[in-house]
Image 1 (cartoon, rainbow, N blue to C red):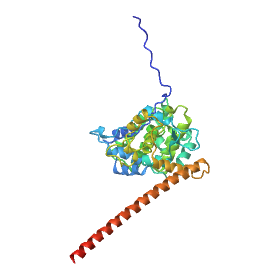
Image 2 (cartoon, rainbow, N blue to C red):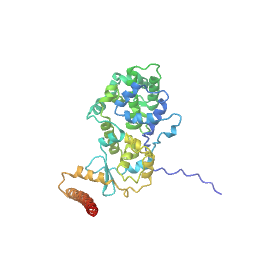
Image 3 (tube, rainbow, N blue to C red):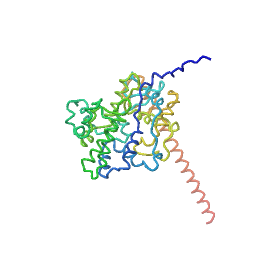
Image 4 (cartoon, one colour):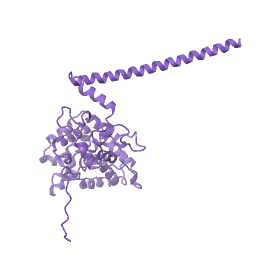
Length: 371
């Protein structure tokens, strides 16, 4: 019997990237620091930061004795890919995902902020800091100068690794007496960690370019950056500029939750006992969403009716063409719906009054009989 050489399995050419950015990485950070503990002052500083609610959600629910109770928030890569491939690159409306001919979901910084529990402050400071930073001026950066100057001697002097961030973070937290500045640096290092593993990291989410130190240089800098706007813009720049969407290096898990929030409630279940959690990211198991997408026909699910109405009114309100006819149709349906509600209310009130009249007549008749 002839022995042939075993063929190497064919690789899927659409899955060249890793899509490693994940909310699960926040749990990994919490696992490292929970046993050390944040001081009350550090917690107070962290809650004021845009990303503070997101981190504190996992910090407060993490049980070191039973880590399995913390929600699993890894993703199914094929599910994420199917969603990214629905991005509308050629349309006039920005940040739009299309499913079939008439189903769509639009992302905005406001939605990003709502899902991740971040506050928008209407500032472009973060964009300016990243635009004008020079690698030759890094020695003037407070955080770089204190914690990361030794990366100059590594093979990748412009990359701060996840491992290095955690090492420096734990050194600060293990101090016997932490000063006010130490606690502020803890918040800054948490921000840099999130930049690495979720917001702006490399293809494997294991390192981040040193230029992002510009937006977490000091605690005051962290508070002046509008993080939802910055991260959202970076995410869609990545989607637009990558011919292969699996190479997107940004906060793609957010898109899964955006998708789940705009589909019918019966399609994807929320996490039991977390249905009303704030930030809203805590209401969903990203694994469940991505598994649903992996096996779904992307033209068959239905966007919620409320979202469809809001989308039409917001995006086509000034269009006098066919889109304007859509508005008239939608408004007509809405008007009929309101008239139906009012009609039902009127009939209900008439029935109550009629029953009340009959009851009063009965009482009067009984009273006359007694007299």
